[in-house]
Image (tube, rainbow, N blue to C red; front, side, top):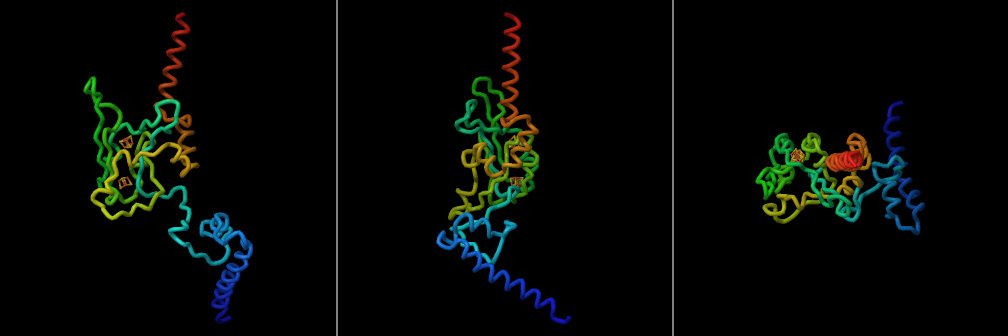
Length: 218
Ligand code: SF4
Ligand code: SF4
């Protein structure tokens, strides 16, 4: 029948309109904007009912796990038993090579005693105004050392000084990565053979072998 589609569409709109008030009644007295209400009603939720306006910046829609903004560097947790705060980056330079707009700058560290390069960056910079959030650096890093962050509130009044992120600003604890990407970090840990960084696992295996040899020799 001519106009049936229009009526159906209006019916859907009316349903959403009424659901808005019916849903509000469910949270009556608890405040319309409790975290539970907010999470239920944002578009990512399959229970979404009614019309919904996000009152940003007081409220923020949760971003999906694979959301990516500016990269960050993973470091060991600051309360880790071994090497607290150790940066996972080995300064291999692959991320800087694959970065399409070339916005990563790395200065490789040098051992002060031997003068030889050490597998750790002395300095690490990302120009976040140039970064196009492609995620290639994180894709290509062979050490799981650089990850895409969820923090998108990076505006400032001075882009000349505030938008070149240095090593200190880029570094975030491993537990942060686990908190924003529980599924991906678990998959990566499984592929590595454990929750710890593969260098730590390697060191542990080496220590165990040395201990075994020492026990065998005695
Ligand atoms: S690819 Fe990974 S390990 Fe290599 S320099 Fe980049 S962040 Fe560091
Ligand atoms: S996300 Fe893309 S553009 Fe940004 S630093 Fe990584 S590789 Fe470069």
